[in-house]
Length: 127
Image (cartoon, rainbow, N blue to C red; front, side):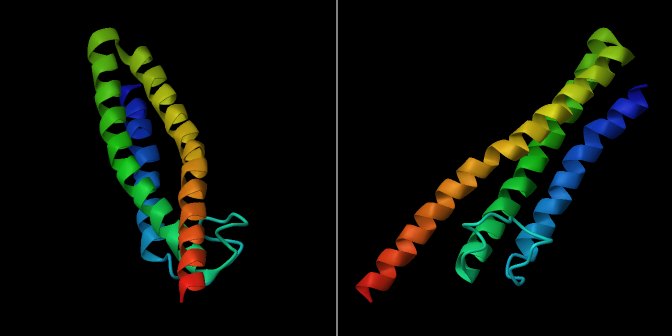
């Protein structure tokens, strides 16, 4: 069961890291309805799209690294202290927490995107 816990402990953060890297590296792709950080605000302009996707990609990449470290340490400690069953459920809990955090970053990105949008409006008014 530890091997299954270990897979869960690594797989979810690894997927988050890979998605973050892909999102950041491809932030300047065309606005589309399939790939990227897609909200009405991010899809309003090309500048918004690039900004939001770069920011989201960075957060996912670095957050995934932190998540991997925390997840692996938590599962390992749970295994050492309480055994296989606890390690498995610790892995499940850490991965659920990672999923919650993925949704929790949306308001942060939207706030930063709104500030970015406001700065661009003010810059265009001054020009």
